[in-house]
Length: 295
Image (cartoon, rainbow, N blue to C red; front, side, top):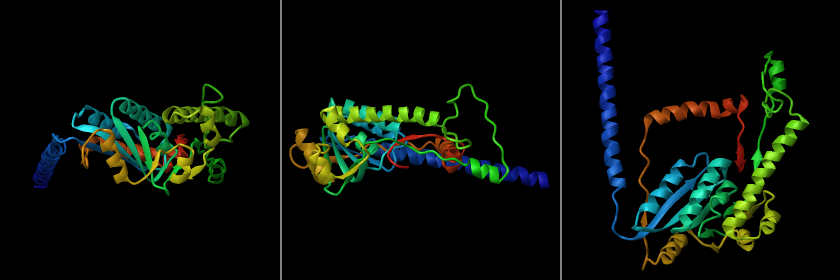
């Protein structure tokens, strides 16, 4: 009797799982078909970058989507970000630069577009900021922790096997040596020079002019305009209207949104697992990230 009940329970659970999967698939199909429906009317695309820049894939996907649409004559990139990891910021920068070579792309800065948020904005056709937008912060940061004393107090010993003296540089489980500091500082300095060159190229400014203000300082939008880091002061609506004018659209341009990303529930599970190891636990175990901005 017990065995029969168990079989029925498993069958019911499987049936529910199949029904759930089918409902998700049907809902996703409906959403995708609605979002990807194209309009014949010419308009301006809107892409939003909010929060920490930890990954570049979705922003790049949206830029490439709009680049292929003939009805999208220009794009407004709304940036509200304190910065993020170096490599994704550089990847978005490169894609914005490619986009600007073929279509107009106007950046509209929200309350915060600093460090990596400014980095991805630099190669745009034009940059709008509010007078009180916090921006600039041209610099690189690498945060490290040391929990060696804590490990000693709780009686845990750590042993490391390595192939070179620098292989565990920055490890939270041993002292940070002068050699470690010099090596990591050289990496930070090189990455900082990359940031300076990117801003100078994107904004068409002399590199020495950018270097003078590339000390991590933040600026208001009004101050940034004085240093030619921003072109105009204005709102998101101002940026949309300017994008329409630059694209040759008569009247108020229609605002076009990119299709939503399809939800992959397997990816969500994987990302959830990655988050466990990239969060506080992962950092304690020796994770190292260079940032265009503060974590």
